[in-house]
Image (cartoon, rainbow, N blue to C red):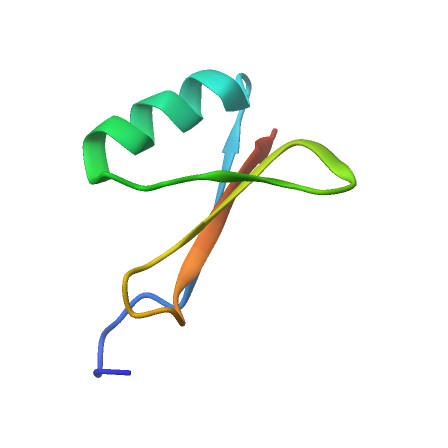
Amino acid sequence: MAHGDITHVEIPADDPERAKAFYSGLFGWELGDMPGFEGYYMWRAPNGISGGAIGKR
């Protein structure tokens, strides 16, 4: 991983579905459901190491 890469970010949102649509469009992220965590969406960066999630605030 290059120096300065983001490793993980969590984005709290009042409306996770809306945030999912927004960040998918803005950054081209492909967010998937996380089994067992309704309303919590995970994404993985192209480097395969970094990623993050959007969840209910």
